[in-house]
Structure formats: structure tokens, C-alpha cells
Length: 241
Ligand code: 6PG
Image 1 (cartoon, helix red, strand yellow):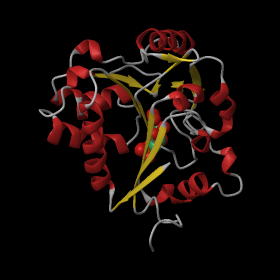
Image 2 (cartoon, rainbow, N blue to C red):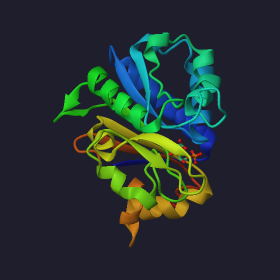
Image 3 (cartoon, rainbow, N blue to C red):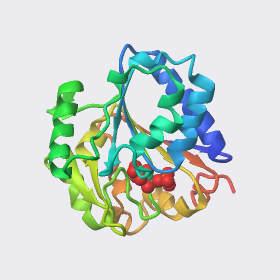
Image 4 (tube, helix red, strand yellow):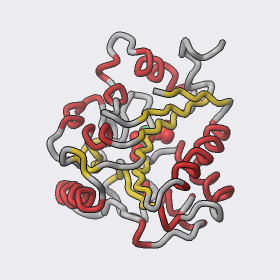
């Protein structure tokens, strides 16, 4: 596990974008699962601003680690956010964008998306393998859309599951723990002081950390890299005070 701590979320975005560009350069086809929420917005803005013409986007195949079960035009849609902050500013072939159809029945879509991943990606022991899974972490320790109150979804047999947001009840389609931990690489992008307690719990395995889905991210053979800003890393021993 590699832990990278940067000054603030802008530096996290700058550094991760350069890291991402480097990863893509070395491949003919790069399959990445995106996360949603607010942190990726800044990363996508930097990618679009600084790497639009240096990354060969035809090599990048976009998927989502999780998506809200809403229309693609809904402000809650991770796809919509990604169009606004990234796809609308780069030359990416339409066929490279594999959105979760949030407008579909959640259970049907979870099955469809799992099948899509099984067809599109290489498989390791039958599990679709991403080149990179980008994850965020909620204040409650959730990741992708596996929440603490239904942490058993992490070990679901199906590669994609239907999750329910604990507060809003919003349905979501999420990849499961097996898909996440089969990835060649997992990058956690976590910023903000509100995450510090859970970052400490997950990285330093403090008592009770097992209750947080983010603590189950342990790539089988892949690499795990944390991109943190100083506020999110404030409680870490490794973080120079
Ligand atoms: C989502 C995300 C979710 C997100 C965390 C952190 O669809 O909401 O995939 O898992 O990564 O909630 O979100 P922030 O980056 O906004 O803190």
C-alpha cells in the first residue's frame, strides 16, 4: 500500500492526473472504473485542462464503480458529472464510454452491467479485472456504493449489486468487493478533514475498522495507492505533524 499526502485537493488532482496519464501511456487499452461524488470533479477538471491533448483517449475505456439509479440527465448522475467535467472537453470515442443505465430497473441493470464487464474485461478466476479502479470514501467509510449498513454486499456472488443509500434510500448499482480487489490497481482519492477519522481507521486498522467497507479494499495482487490531502491525512502517524 502506498500513501501519498498532498497539500490540498487541487494538488491531489494535479498529482493523480499526472499519475493517470503515465498509466495510460504504457498501454494500448486501459480499462478504468470511475467513482462519483465531489472529489473526482476536480480531478476530471484537471485532466480536461492539462491532459486533453496529451492522453490518447481512444485507449481509455471508461466504466463506473458505482452509479446512482437516476436518469443520465439527473444532477445526481455520476455519468452526467463526468460528461460535464471531462467528456465534454476531450476527444473520447463514444463507444469507450460504458455508463451504467441508471434509468433502468436496478436489479436488471446490475445484471446487465456485470455481464458487460465479464465480456469487456479480462477475467481472473472468473472475475472481471480493471486496469484501475478509482475509489472515493464517504464520511461513513463507504466506498463505491457499498455502505456499512449493508456491508455484506461486498461479498456478493454477483459482480454488480444493487445498493441502497442509508439516508436517502436512493438505489445504486455498484461493483462488488471481488471486482475491486481483482483490479491491477486501486487508487483511493480522499480529501477533506471530514474523512480524517475514517482514513486513520482504515489505514491504521484501529478498533472497529472492519465495519467500514473501505477497509475491505485489499487488492489480491494489485497495487493500492492512497491520494490524500493533508486534512484527510491529519490523523495518520505517517503524516509528519
Ligand atoms: C458516489 C461515490 C462515492 C464517493 C464517496 C466520496 O457515487 O457518491 O462513488 O462512493 O466516492 O461518497 O465522495 P466525495 O468525494 O464527494 O467525498
